[in-house]
Length: 128
Image (cartoon, rainbow, N blue to C red; front, side):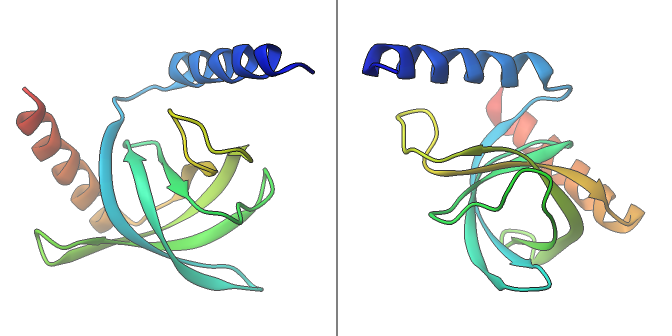
């Protein structure tokens, strides 16, 4: 694959991801703690929606991997807990996406879902 083909492929992937999203995605910088059976650590959320998020990480998990998360909402002194599944991985840093992974929420208690929705509603107000 030549370099031009690579960039065209990345652009197509970005368009496909945008078309599959069911809810608005907001660019954010939030701390996230993750935990799997084998590992745990901290990373940064690059974008967030009610359906999932994009994590910047130099060591993304494989597609289909599931893991627990805790998102820190420092402005509100609250957190959000849930379980995610990796739906796509970006192995190469690009202008649009640093190396990392896109994940979808697969489990979240109603209390945390409400916090997420309230946070996103605040983001929507700020965006306008």
